[in-house]
Length: 187
Image (cartoon, rainbow, N blue to C red; front, side):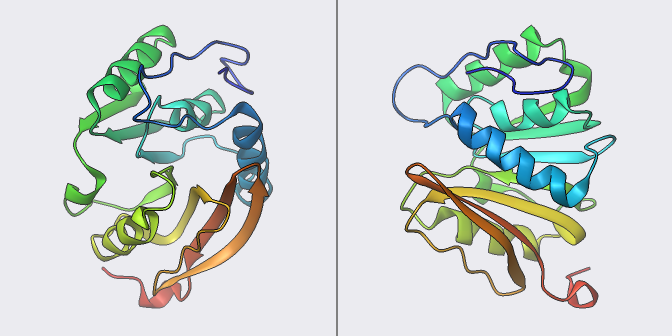
């Protein structure tokens, strides 16, 4: 695995040992960030959350492209070790925060994020459950773009969120979502 573009382009990333996580393949990451860039333009100064972070590849890719800050949330110890090693290798500690917990235990957000990246285990419905919770807790605001990676045959349906785009990549599916009615977003 490597960073695809930006400041750290071509730099190698460590993957967690074991099979508890499934790192997003370079091709899928490249497709995802192309989809994102066509909608948000520049990543400059974005506040990003990388949830079910695994190796942290998605959040680090956003930071490499100019995001100001990234929160990584992961509960698997081997994955946390990989995230921390990757953050150190990129000298990105000042722009990152790592939470060692389940996404399902996150508390209310102080303010919404610009970009939320979710790569939960396939075929668990964890994306929909987490997104419903994040929406209710203020993580997703009127301007937030949410990106999920799920199995190609999984559907992500969350009341209050609309699918902006979907694309199948190998065994996975990338889905971009936004709040359906920004005026109705939880305060």
